[in-house]
Image (cartoon, rainbow, N blue to C red; front, side, top):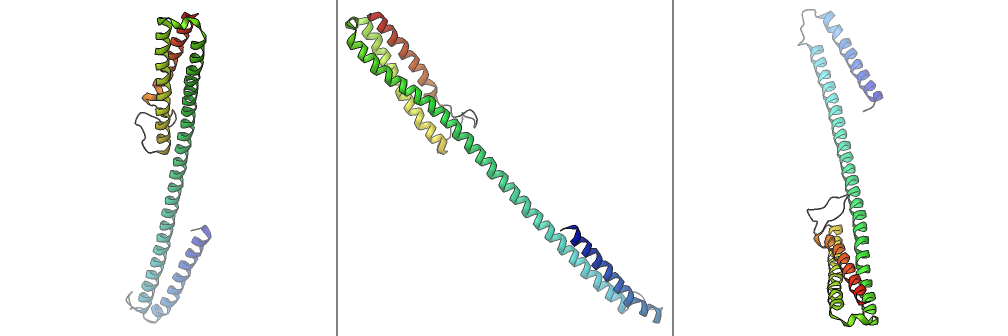
Length: 200
């Protein structure tokens, strides 16, 4: 309720009090012995009750309006926080998926390049380079597989289907498969490189 409306209420109350005093003054002059139980006192009590009821209704309306506005503000704040969490989740998922895509691409490229070099190098006919390259291929295939598994887990985490307990909204999803894939790729690169150097 604005200031102007409150001023109107105060003016109304003042007018009602003046009217009640006008109605009561003749009765008081004509019947000095009459107490508050006369017609003037009853009219004043009735007017006071009407004023009190009007003020109470105005206060109740203001309280209901303020409660409604507070509920709307809280709902908007909750929606904004949820949108922020969803955006942070999306950005974290994009970063993680980019890392997994890089790991999978490098693992596949390592398999292709090492296979071509293994056929071309004459020293790959001996046992040691073959064993090292075979173990390197196993690690590369493991890196590729774990990257694909982690990709599915991150997609489910982004959709909120199976959120994992070991993640934060800012750091992104942390999975065992996603953490293992880079180490398997590093092992594959090391073993394949050693095998190729041995075959020279």
